[in-house]
Image 1 (spheres, rainbow, N blue to C red):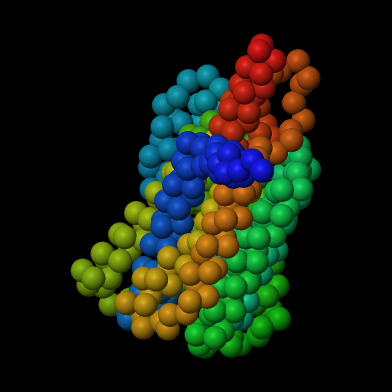
Image 2: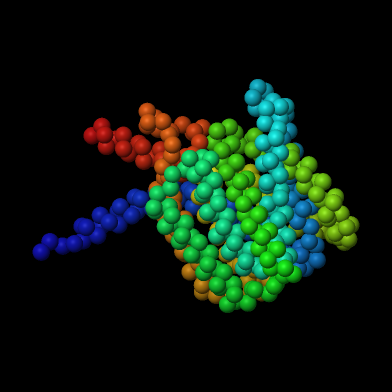
Length: 360
């Protein structure tokens, strides 16, 4: 009988070539970089709330929007032609307002949800409802065509989220029962929907137009909307803060992490997709937990490692295959500016391989 080693070696080579390409590894690295940014915002916010009794999420968001305004909106003001700030406002002012409103209110609703429902409810509903809504909007607006492997991968990621929620319950992190669980859960569903709308709009703009336009418009209208809301909702909380250098440093750290998140996310979305990004950042809660072991005395559970592994396997599986898109038949290599392209680097790689095979 012939040995089976060559077949096994071929299988391993196929898996390596399919799942561990440079583009997938780059996507994983970028996704985890975003997760660490989200982890930084979560840790600094929790530290402010627990150690200094400072709970001002709108002020923290306002600082971030101001930074985006000072950098990206000002950049647009000095551009010429269709990239000029006044031209964009004249042609698309209402779309820009909707984008800024969706982004600001999504952040606000999720923060308010934490005050009314449990931590695990927010985690599970935000991921398990938000990602399917995002996929549906991507299919409807961006013409993303999902394959069976994508659905399996997403199901695997959500299974990892379920494992993480179960670990939270077993570890005793279900401390906050909230004032009104039903209202809190409704706020999470609304916030998740707005996040999905914001992410799809962002993907459309960065792939069809430019990253500066997204960040400039979010900075402009985010500053205006969050500033108004700040004066209405949080002015008493801000006035009661006893400022010192530690609190100021935590605000600076939060603003830095949030600014990096907003600045890099359009870059990652452009070479992958909004869905890929949202699957990749599912690990942010786990990073927050690992830091919380030292900062807040969290209890560790082996289920967290299992959850991280399951999420990463699902994420890699999703990135291994590009989605089908509604592209013109005559185009063998999609342009960077076309919409509906998921995992663009993988798509280019796949097309080049098919072209090479045809020549042979």
